[in-house]
Image (cartoon, rainbow, N blue to C red):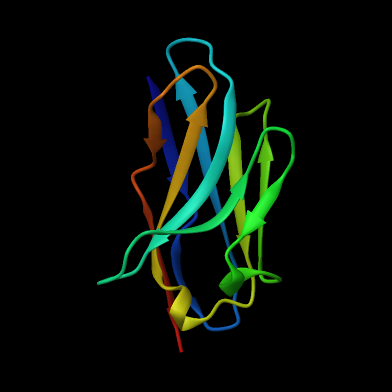
Length: 118
């Protein structure tokens, strides 16, 4: 079993920045493959914002390219999302998502609220 703890959400004005963090822990040794960030705005489906693999590949939603950067520290089992030039349409609950090698389950964080005011 893997637990994910997210932090870094909050209220920010348009044009501002926030940095989200997600730390993974567990009772047994595990190695993480994918570490991603999703978001879900009210009345909308959850969508992938940024993804990363252990090998270093990253991908982004078109709406955040050039503004958001995903990074990870494999030794600390932590993933980050640096969000710059935030827009009101970025307002959502942001979820960390993790896939572990050899484990068919997917793990989700509890979600952290990001609110961007205009």
